[in-house]
Amino acid sequence: MTENRTPDSSRRSERSRRAIHDAALGLVGEVGYPKTTIEAIAARAGVGKQTIYRWWPSKAAVLLDAFVALGERTAGRAEGEPAPALPDTGDLAADLGTVLRATVDELNDPAFEAPTRALAAEGIVDPRLGAEFVEKLLAPSFELYAARLRAAQEAGQVRADADPRVALELLVGPVTHRWLLRTGPLTHDYADAIVDHVLRGLLPNP
Amino acid sequence: MTENRTPDSSRRSERSRRAIHDAALGLVGEVGYPKTTIEAIAARAGVGKQTIYRWWPSKAAVLLDAFVALGERTAGRAEGEPAPALPDTGDLAADLGTVLRATVDELNDPAFEAPTRALAAEGIVDPRLGAEFVEKLLAPSFELYAARLRAAQEAGQVRADADPRVALELLVGPVTHRWLLRTGPLTHDYADAIVDHVLRGLLPNP
Image 1 (cartoon, rainbow over the protein chains, first blue to last red):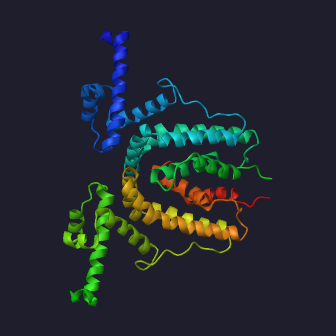
Image 2 (image 1 turned 120 degrees about the vertical axis):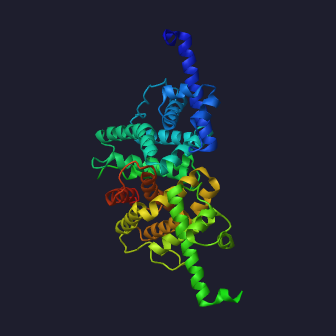
Image 3 (image 1 turned 90 degrees about the horizontal axis):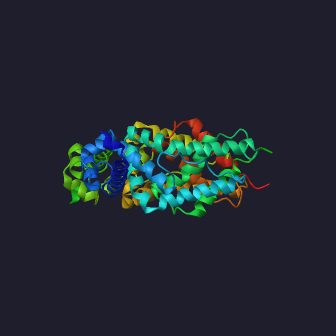
């Protein structure tokens, strides 16, 4: 089908894909993961079910893709463009503070909150979906933190025997935990307190 | 009804209560929170629905109570007996390691895992249930951590300007985060690495 290669048809595909993503995120936030169906996504997006099945093998795949696209859009990136490295101004505390405050803002953003909670909740009880959630959404961001921490290690700002993987979970874990379980207010002050505390534990050995 | 005060009737009540708790925990682990009904709990426990409604106002109340009782039983405490303080041998690192390793064992215990995941997942998408989960299950344990950290502050082992609330979330948050989202293996080594890192950040200012 040569029409698929015309500019008009590409634009139509792009619009459909975006409408499907939006429908999927909207529905999962409103009715939860178990009750979100391919049929309902198709109906809300105004496309046929077959359009969805042509592009994605499963509901989980549509949703994970929709999350990746939402993250790209929020960050102003083109589709498929990888997330940039963490800022590296030479001031590790300032750089980690910038990133963790942005994470707090994102988690508190209503466009993210309901669908992210719904997907995380399902991943908690469904190990297969959980593994995809980690692989597609969390692992890439963990790698960016680890790279920034390794750079600080090389610059002598972080003790050489610190494990970047443990250190990044000490930054991300408490913030995500507080958000998921609502154990307290999720604020910039909290992000700053976490960064301050974690960096004290990373100081080079005297 | 004077029979309610005879020893036999007390024992029967106790048996029914225990059967209802076990049924509730079993069901929520098997079918998830939304599909666990009072009817199904009653059927599995071999009691009438009215018995459940006489003791608890809602499904959430039965389940939260069942979790509290499970925690008491696992710890060998009598019903209603408050959790003891954290160990205080004077060695903060050893004491926190003991507690966090025990948390890891509990989270990895199949008797806890499925029902705890199911309840946590529902609390993530249902703010009211989430608030009860925090108040009845998490807050009491947070308070024990905070008390142990304050004792260490008074003993001069922890810097005076550290916030015990932030410090305890740095211990509990990463472990719970790793368990909930399955971002990595939840082991004693991981618990030890967290304690080691967090305590470095709590050292008294030179």
